[in-house]
Length: 195
Image 1 (cartoon, rainbow, N blue to C red):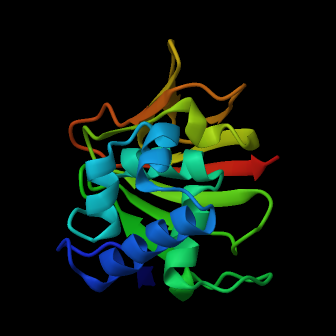
Image 2: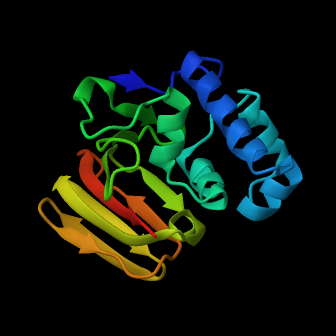
C-alpha cells in the first residue's frame, strides 16, 4: 500500500504532494495569485501547501483539483508516480488520509481509468465538504455505501444512505459527505466519469 499522507507535515508523502501541487500550477503557467483566484484558496495557504509547511485537507485539495480540472485521484497518483495500465494491484494503490477528518481514501482503479473508483473510510462524526467546482469536469458521479451510514448533502438536498444503497448524482453542486454515527465508520465507493 502506498501511503501519501504521513502524520507530520514534512513527511515524504507531504513533500511529494507539495511538489506535485507546484508542478500542476507551473505547467499551466499560473502564478499563486491566479490559482488562488481560480480555486478560492488563499495565496498564503497555497504557498504553505506547495512548501510542505501545511498538510492540505481534502476540502482544500478538492478546490485546487477543481481549478486544475483534474480529480483528486489523478493528483495523488501523479504525486506518487503511479504508472497507468489495466491492473491496479492492491499493494500499489495510492492511499491518502485527510489530516483534518482522518478520512482514508484509496484510489482503486489505475490512473486514467473510466470510471474512476475511489474507496473511502469516513470515521464516526466526520464530515468532508467539496465545492461544485471539484466535480465540474465530470459527467457522472455515483456513491455506493459498502458499510455503515452516509449522509450526503447535495446542495440543499440531503440523502441518508445505508449499506447497499447507491446514489447517482445530478449536475455538480456544493456537497458534503457526512458520517452521522458517533460510533461506526462509514465505508463507501465513489465512481467518477470525466467529460
